[in-house]
Length: 180
Image (cartoon, rainbow, N blue to C red; front, side, top):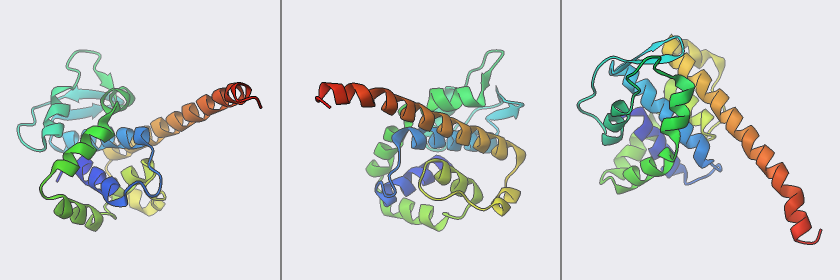
């Protein structure tokens, strides 16, 4: 099962507890796809750029779709660009795919069993499903995974800051409208 499928199955099993922000999960799912595309040698990470390298012919339909959406023109796309572009609305699409799967309970059981997989643990932490793993789990990650996970955590932090900024901006105006 692809990493993004396992992450999405975990989100379904948890049922939103702790509260999982849709945007955070979408960014983590885009990162999971990217990690799987690198494993499949469909893309290479060169600095912060994603260089298309091959095709993904089999696998989850969403992963095949992700491979087809790689930017194939110079200067190629950055990891952070991929996270924001591919991640847009991705949580809902994966949730639908997981819920539609005939083997939801098997997927959920596999995802829970793999809870301590270092990549899955870091992605789940980025999505807000669990606390960040200890530093010793990073020793089991390769440099590409570390780079992608770092970009993911930064993107999630930027998204949280944007949510907070919008909340602050809405706060006073909502109070005025309500007569406070």
